[in-house]
Length: 138
Image 1: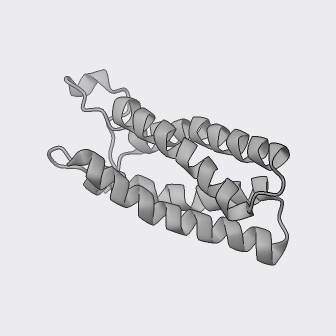
Image 2: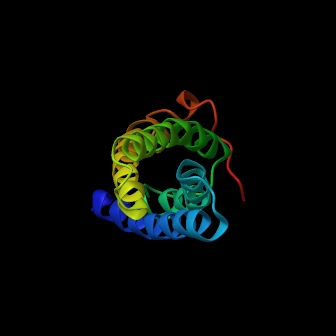
């Protein structure tokens, strides 16, 4: 069930992400890689809250400064994978439609994001003291 919830959140985030990225490229003339960063960043904030409160729900879940920090660090790796994929595809296949390139980059980052989120960010600590960042936001 967790993977299904992750997928639902990811698809909603992806729709927001791609809409913003495509609009930024098509309407504002931003380079694809920069448009991808913009879409990714906005959607990531929404996805963190949804994953924290719904996707990886175990017991009482509240927004956590520690998990938010870990999620931000994890997204750096995820964003790196996305930008590398978009840049490589745009350079190697310049005739490919921008939306297809952005979608492929999103697919790469989906896989990276799920694995990092599941195993590093939203893991359930056996002992709460094990997590150095246990404070929560009200």
